[in-house]
Length: 310
Image 1 (spheres, rainbow, N blue to C red):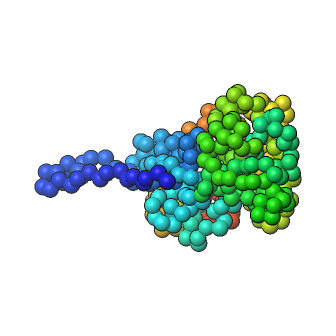
Image 2 (cartoon, helix red, strand yellow):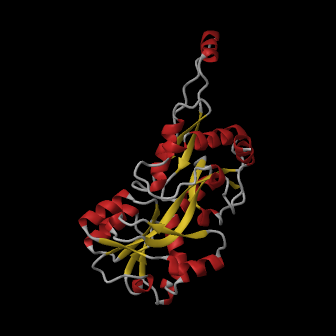
Image 3 (cartoon, one colour):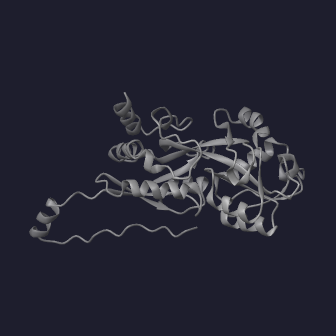
């Protein structure tokens, strides 16, 4: 786990002259640490874009923190080690009651990546293979476990694959070297590191939607059918897969003024919060930002959306 660091505070200089000078200066924005994800992933990229968008704000600024992903971010929020966190909605649904949402920001695509020459063309073919679920503490690993279970591929029963937990970078390297047969990844499309892998070793993306009906029966209103566009990672056709919304989360105690300022950033800086090469679904629109179910919006964020959108 990356060591958590905070911005150093300026020392206070005693004296009436120093106080007068401070009173005339531009108020500093309140810095908020945002738990993101692994290098190369959409979470960290979004965090960096949000940090850039708020860099000149006098109300709030965001400092992205590398983490293992959704479940790790939820833990960091509960432990008060970060102020904000990004999480898949399925992971957030199991969070503590004091977690609230600032907005729904974009959709993750569950990607099951295999070598094109591995003889794996469907989820059932993963049985007996070595598969990375994702990094420990990641939402991808939690979702992948649910998908395998819904597909009758529970590793604990002996009917499923041999599962390991690798960081994203480790999984990419292991697949290229043939140490694993497949890996799950939850992120935007295309993910640059997977695109680079596809240039080195031909890969395929497996359709995960056969598990969707069973998943939706167990976890209503969390998962959706979506499609990875044709051409991504060299695919000659679009590939159906499971989509999971991403939420920007905070503790319920977050100051109202900061929640409002974050909403303004999501609305006003929406174009700057989308990576230039992103092909996936973005939720930075009036109707989508407020749809954070089953996680409640921060009351001040909800009010600000009403003020902005009516």
